[in-house]
Image (cartoon, rainbow, N blue to C red; front, side, top):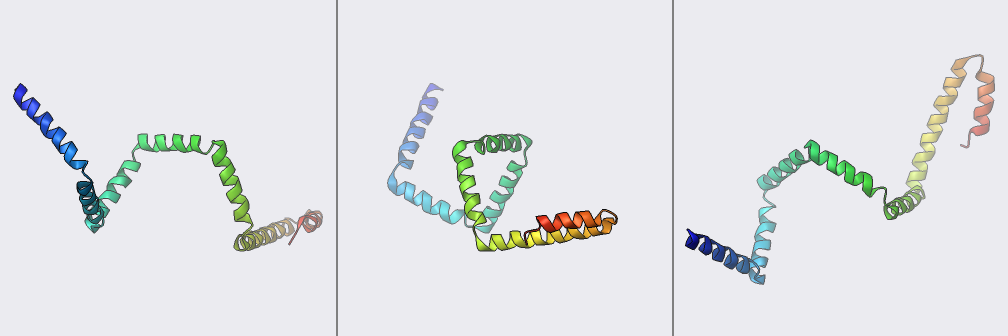
Length: 131
């Protein structure tokens, strides 16, 4: 039995050495690149990944990690900077402006439907209105 155990260790060691060769690594890399492009393999991997991410322990660990990640000062600074740049985009400005315009129109309609408090509220909305 000791002989068999020693033999498997030798085989494992030689296999490990073989896999470290650059030409073998390149061949394996090329094979895996092609293999993972097969639609059935892609679908199977996608399904298993989806199933893995549905596990409660995985969800909890990811949630915990993200909670800690977004508390880091460098991440907060990066997101703050991105948000500033994002708000400077013309399409975003236009979308915000349109949203606020509609929002205040709805508010104004709601105040006017109120009845007796309508006049006071309408004056307040005119003062607050920027658009």
